[in-house]
Length: 131
Picture (cartoon, rainbow, N blue to C red):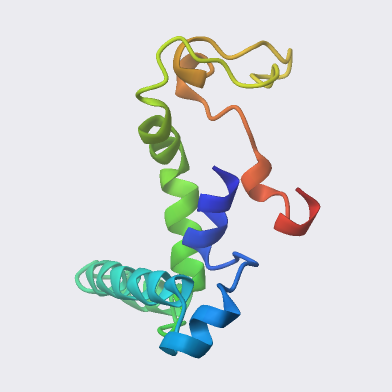
């Protein structure tokens, strides 16, 4: 889950297979990154068009139009819960490997989810090299 967050936000440390890059000119990781940039370019276009009155504020926040790092970060913050639900929807009866729900550290119940569908891990905010 945390690696997905790193990939979406453009922070993944894995740059791909160097042999593949020599052979094909780019790695599958490069292709994925390019596709993500295309997706976030469309999101950027949707977000910055319209929004009368806040257009300048939105354009100032999302001024990076090559990598879209701020937009990607905001997208992940707003959608991480839905990504977790999508990943765990088929995990009926599953539990996370240790108790991580809430301040009392209760275990996850069905489908590796805390009550209220809270994501039981915050590893996606821990730098990748520390995980």
